[in-house]
Amino acid sequence: MHVEKKSELRSLLKSGDKRCKLVEPRNTKSCVWRFFNLVQCDDRIEPYACCKTCGDLLSYSGKTGTGSLLRHRCLHSSSSNGKFGIRISRTPL
Ligand SMILES: [Zn+2]
Image 1 (cartoon, rainbow, N blue to C red):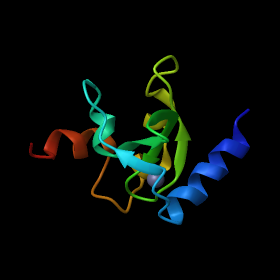
Image 2 (cartoon, rainbow, N blue to C red):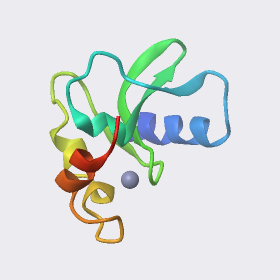
Image 3 (cartoon, rainbow, N blue to C red):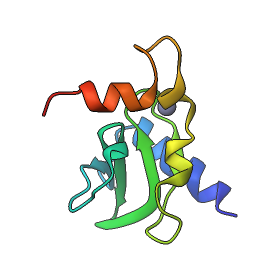
């Protein structure tokens, strides 16, 4: 797996390294991207998504889709205003 890459990216993001940044995904249909950013490193999009709530990195690629992101704990946290689906539908554009 890509654990080393993941922790490397995480520390780069944490240290504010200019090679690495969070970007808003484009052309995505899924509401899940309101809760995540994509990770860009050296001008390449990495196969990870960064949770806007806790800053955790999750594996993501176009192939695997957003299933793993939808299962992320922050989207199901009881401390945050009810269930995921409700949050999404109530979020104004
Ligand atoms: Zn999170």
